[in-house]
Length: 557
Length: 79
Image 1 (cartoon, rainbow over the protein chains, first blue to last red):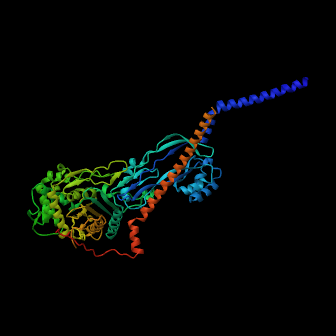
Image 2 (image 1 turned 180 degrees about the horizontal axis):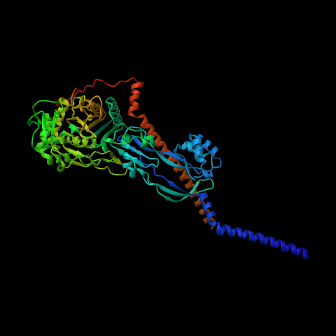
């Protein structure tokens, strides 16, 4: 009997111990480990994930893709969780088509808890690697920016970086519009990973699509012509702008040499020369193309008419400088129209002296020089225009012929656009519209009267029909325009005798202008004259643009 | 009471199914967006003026017109 009682007590003691152990375990789990276990349990069926916003697409005016976001997957790893770095590197290298040796260096570095194996990799390749279920390797979706037209319009469109933010060009200018806002959601999943419920979500706002005024086909052709022109003259650079006279929309804006934005991030290491959009950010001394400002000013001020004649010597002394004609000549009598068509330095300075510095300065300002055009592109410069109180005695002999003043190609093309548009200046712009927003209205202002614009157009026609710009003639179309040849300032002072900017700016059809085209060629070799170097490129661009845009010819032949 | 419980269960099953369907539709939508992008890119590449020009020149043997002539035609006078 006593033996049985002892056994029962022993059993009770064992059960009591077991109960105490169980109680202790429960207390440990419930009181001490509860929070950690709750987190583990939640993480097994609850998933919080960011929903990245899609970056908006950039289209040209015809709806052709210029930049868009492509689905991509970023592959990362925690080297501390990698069991066999060598095997993982081989498998990942095969799937992602990367060098296993490079991956091994990353995966075996246990001093780091996070390394990228491949940023924005092909999602199919990443999926193949995911199927191998290698512990320590993770994946997340991203978007990769792609520029399907490659180098076409690269200076205009710019590029977005690896983080999908705009770093240059319109990608930078329109970053807020294109980027959108990331969202997030919290989902409950079943043991098979299927979504049961979305318990919380912040709606993603995708970036807006942007439609440009650029025309992809025209842009491509302009770049092609510019590339050939630059090569023919072994020039350091060349720029061309095609502007719609009525709307101010930039139909093409080409800079040579260019770059292919798809090669980013390599592109950021390139010579900065390639990345600049010279039409907007660079200035040049315009030379004779600037003469229209003075001629327009004296006509509009009523000081002269196109037929007013002047007896002009072969040179003129202004302050301490003597200014000659580009081609030496004796004293001649020229009308105002002939002064412009023959690009007479002496004649234009004579007209400028009639205006005097204050009024000439006012006309320079009215034509838009010395101020930003307000184009929707980052980094625009205002150029260099001295205020009249800083002019020296000889400035009135320099500025009217386009020396001692620096302008951007965009300012110049907009100024000629005003002449072509019956005297109304229209703000040049690149963005036609943004999805979900009203189209921006470009600013307009009157620069000269319709009559003066018409008189200037007739004079500029003379330049192309019988003056220095005959090589700018276009089959079937009347052209008005002006050549420019300007020596570049020498770093040691004065002007270079070997480095020039050759340019031509004009519009067509002269009877009802629709497009303005500017071509500048920087430091051409072999020839320096705007009429020889830039005007033929203008004619080629103009011929293509007028036919492509189906603008009716205004003359037979 | 039993009917109420059955109704609650049926409702939950229905919500579950809809959530699963929603996920499937999200996936389909993403696939369609991706496909649409691919087609847009394909269209852009195929309609590219440079490509068409090279096909015209290299494959079809066409040449650019060298001598253009423009004729200005006057509309006939009424009557």
